[in-house]
Amino acid sequence: MAKCLYEQKIEAYHDGELDADGRAQVESHLAQCAACAAHLNQMQAMSQLLASREQPRLSQISRYRLQRRVDAVMEQGLLRFAWMMSGIAATVLLIGSAWLMRVDDTTQAAAPAEAPPWVSVSLSNSRDPVVREAATPAEQWYLADASGNDAIEANQ
Image (cartoon, rainbow, N blue to C red; front, side, top):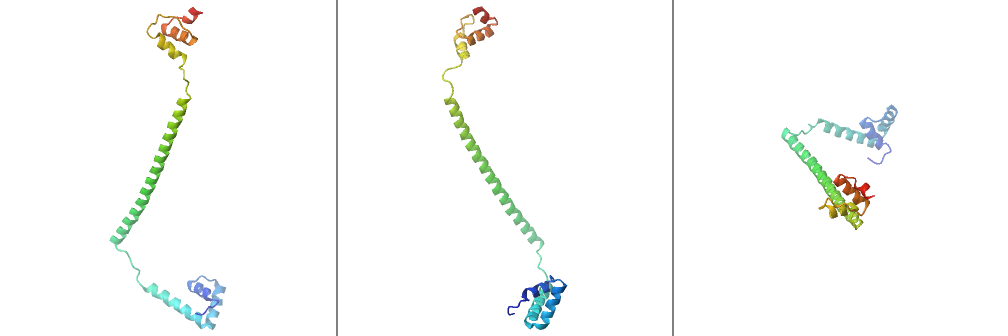
């Protein structure tokens, strides 16, 4: 068929996609254009040939094999996703652990070089509970609490 302006409309006419006015225009054109009429006859013959053929059907075993293959492909995708998420989680865990170790190192470096006063009280007076000499108020409080007496008031 030579390039006719009605070529697309003839295909739409064959498929039943035109309204009443469009169908009337195409039918009047088909009466005048032998090439378009031949093209329409060719499309109708092809449609009839395809409609008369028996549609191929899958056997039950073929459908079962196809379903197993589809399930296997879907499972592989799910496993790939699970491995990817596990890798991301492991990476986050490693980076977080390294960061926490680094944070712990910086806090230890900033720790005071000298121990708090109550540590020296427990070390200096831990063997002799009778000793009542305390140099700092924290030591006095500790000794008073350990002996049950009111050592703070006695020293004041």
